Image 1: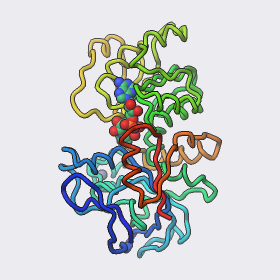
Image 2 (image 1 turned 90 degrees about the vertical axis):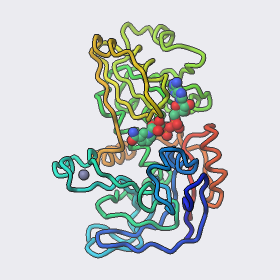
Image 3 (image 1 turned 45 degrees about the horizontal axis):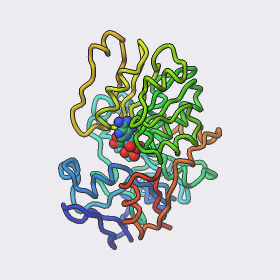
Image 4 (image 1 turned 60 degrees about the vertical axis):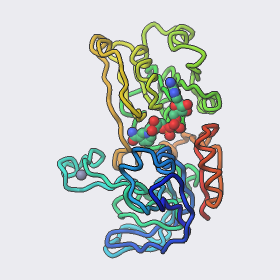
Length: 341
Ligand code: NAD
Ligand code: ZN
């Protein structure tokens, strides 16, 4: 089969012909239809410090996918050949304290599809049946393709109640934009999203944000004033990983404000801790998706009319992967889809 392989411990990614995988006990074989490119994949291609420390080679990479089950391994009796599926990319250990207590998203020993085990940028992948999410057969295929990052957005956006609240989102990447769509759908009052990239702010405007602000040109204090807000933001969603965004968010929060941090910083970030204390802020880290409450929430949100399709801007054939990765790197895009059919 065709597969995008991290073949050697050096920068790059190679389209290779590799043996088809076979599903083990409790696993299914999935024919991949479409995949999405994630920032993690860029780290792996660039072979940065994180990638060098975590990625075994050779490895088929990629973890955002939609596909169809084509074979069942021994012991799988709750899924059917032909099912349209996605999959949770974090495989949990099942044995740590959190797993045993049913809090699988807090597992301390996860494995990652396309990170520590063979991934989805291929014609086929295997996955434990317990990680498979069965889609409604009528779901839009593009939307199903990006359930993994959509799940990051939903998990973060619904961490704190947003009904009637004023929400600040820093970072209008694909995940920030989807989070904006979710909090809007969930009844937030003002939804303010910031970035330094006008293309992405333009994209964010398509999902109904109140203000899409370029913080290279304006300040949150100004936005605040323009909206006539008397106090700060009630809810903050940090989705940039940029070292200036979280400190600015801490400044802009109301007393008792709650911040969910998804963005992964590349180093230490300094924030005004006296403000956190005196304004009684809550800051919570968010990783991945809740298994499988987030997947359930995504499905019903989409079924009920939440439209995240504006975030999908580019599509390439699998063979055009170099151009696709270049597009993601350049940042003048939303989600970029690779077609494997
Ligand atoms: P992305 O890199 O496409 O988007 C980040 C955006 O932040 C970019 O558009 C960038 O221009 C913008 N930005 C840069 N500086 C900024 C600033 N000072 N203020 C506001 N915006 C600024 O990333 P994405 O795919 O949308 O993911 C969002 C973040 O979440 C990334 O940091 C990613 O690493 C992280 N992430 C975390 C998890 C998790 O489980 N915790 C999962 C997926 C992604
Ligand atoms: Zn565990």
